[in-house]
Length: 280
Ligand SMILES: [Zn+2]
Image (cartoon, rainbow, N blue to C red; front, top):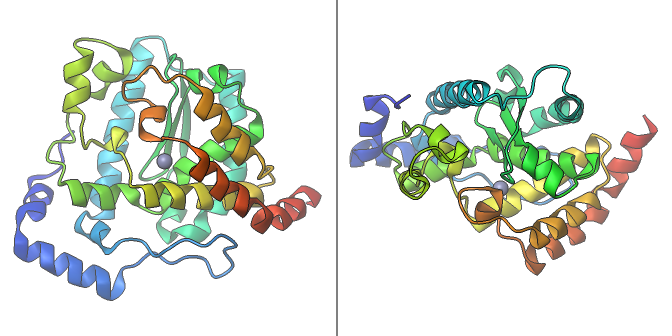
């Protein structure tokens, strides 16, 4: 569950750090699709300090452990579960739209799972590993369009490799804390949550990365035939929801007039894509 020592020491060696930065600046920026309607900046060169393969492997392990713990608790939705099928249908429409944003995504083994939990939470880990918590869908009474906006947003974090960037910045030194304890409320929640700082599932992204994920997610969802106006209603609902603190989505995704206004301003840019997709 721990990242390799080589990875950790690479974060601590100034020489490697400089090489990584230089390399990143020189050649390894993530492309924005030429046809993109929303305007987002280049990806940060910082992310090149954390190899994509390493992070994707760590994500697969953590995802597997999370699912195993959910299964043990009887909280993992089984095939045939109606809500799970709903999520899978939405993912199947979004995934083809994701590939334009990151070449690596073609080889990702995308997965969608649903965990029964009151938490308002959802994420997409590097490598395309998606989890929704029932609390998000039920408490906010999300429509399919709104679910597509959350899923698109989370997929965008993975596609735009925000975790790589954030881990490089925070030099997270221990991805190995067992997350189940914090997520399922086992043990000392406060300590567990504190220990989780800088960990993969609980990374808090920068404001600009959040905005980036909002817009990329918005465009992907519109291209997949989901109503872009749902991005606005989604965040209005988020703003009214009570997250109850902790490590859920609301604590890492502050919403406010700025966020909603920016989405609203971008809705017209992708409205044509949505109309086209609906006709298909
Ligand atoms: Zn986000």
